[in-house]
Every structure is written in C-alpha cells, then in structure tokens.
Amino acid sequence: MRAHLGDRLVVESPSTGVVRRDGEIVGLHHDDGTPPYDVRWSDTGDVTLVFPGPDAHVHPGGGPEEPATGGRGPEPADAVGAVADQPGDIGRRVAAARRRRGLDLAETARRARISPQYLDYLETQASDPSLGTLLRLADALGTTLFELKGGGRDRPPGQGRALRHPRLRDLDERECRALLSTHGVGRVSLTAPDGPAVVPVNYEVVDEAIAFRTAPGAVPAAAVGHEVAFEVDRVDEAMSRGWSVLAVGRARAVTDPDAVRRLDERAHTEPWAGGPRTLWVAMDIDRLSGRRITPADDDA
Image (cartoon, rainbow, N blue to C red):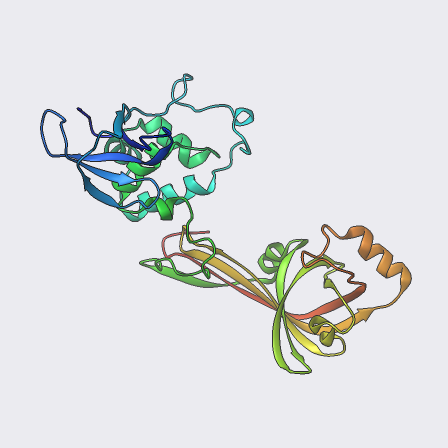
C-alpha cells in the first residue's frame, strides 16, 4: 500500500464492504508512501497514527475540487440551495478563520492544496465543498472540521473569540429603525404574574409600532397596559461582531376589528410557536437605542 498526502483512507467491513470509517491522510512517515499514516478521521476530526489492515484501502485525492469553468465554480443554479452572489455559512467561517490567522488567499490556498480561484469562490458564493477540501482547510487554518461546519450552532451565541481591537458605538434612531426592519424575532421584557420575564416573539413593525400576536392568558399578554422593553439583536459568531436594538414603550391590546384585520393581512409569518394566537399587542415606541460592535478599523 502506498499513499500521498491528501489521499483518503477508507476502512470497510470485511463481510459487507460497507464503509465503517474514512479520513484524510495528513501525514506520511516514509518517503515512499508506505504505512503508517497520520489520518484525520472525518467523523471526529481527530488525527491518529494508523497501521492499515486488510480491510483498508487508499483512494487517491488531494486535488482541488475545481469546476471546469476556470476555477469560478458552478453557476448558482447548479448548486442545491445556492444563492447567487451570497457567501454560504461555510465560506464565511473559512474567510473569518483566514483573517484571524492573518493569511491571504494565495497562502491559504497553497497550504490547503487548492487554487486561489477556488478558495475565493468558496468564500464568496454559496457552495458545498467536499470533505477532503474542508479537512485541508481546517488544517491550513489551525481550526477543526467541527468548527468550519458550524458544529456549535446549538450553543449559546457569543462563545467565539472577541475581536482583538473591538469598537462599540451607539446607533442613531435611523440605524435602529433600519435594523428593526419590518419583521423578525425579538424579545419582549415584562413583569408577568409570576415575576419578571423575557419572552421571544415573532413581531411586525406597522406604522412605527412594534406588534406581535399571542394568546390571551399567555405570558406576553401581560405586557398590555404596561411599559415594556423590546429587544432584537444579531450576533455574527464567525466575525465576532454584532448589534442590538432596544425599544421601550407602553403596550396596548389591538381591539378594533379593522386594525386587527390589517395586522393579519400584513403579517409576514405565522407565530413559530404555533397554536391559536388571536390577541395582537402593539407597543408604541417612546425610546429607541442601539449599539454595534465592529473592528476598531472598520468604518461601518
């Protein structure tokens, strides 16, 4: 058995031929490519020293998975779920890891054994790179396959590294309203019968008021008739930056049938929690403030 860096080691069941485990060969111990090998396993991302047995064989690899169109990548319509001119989550994570390491495209591509054109495509377009490409990129960037694939998506946000030189700035009212946009998911802070509560709700911005649907007797309904706070934010884990907007005002029940009908018609989505939610609550904004975290040298 002989292998090259970047080849794929596949271990199959001797009886069924089903792949039990596979990984990328990331280290050779002999110049002629004979075993043993350092293998980065695709299921864990761990690197172990492997002496292949009779149930293992090598698949050639290591070449860049580049399309035939000069390294530009497939057209967006050819990629499942791709969106034109929009980077995918993996591409954004790769770009962020590369910047944290202070590497340019050419050096990163050299380390990962892919072309700079293909790396640029991965970072700027929604794409689905192969496992081998991701493993080589993880090794080149000093990170893990788990992180590049977004394995921490279910963790609370904000566990990534802070920016080396962060800048925290206040947002003006125009910026706050733009970030609130027309709809989304935010959190309403109120005093419920059992004490203080913060509840996520689907919301709409209608006639400069924040409105959300709930069920009579549900926790968010306790906002009616009281001054409450409403918060919406965005955390960009890959880039270690984010923003938050806080609105404060008095909440009221919307009872006029015509107003209720207009809200029903203008709603962008049904409440994610499901179930009958017939009570519209509107909050007239009295105070609006926000903050954004960016790199110190970022003018945005």
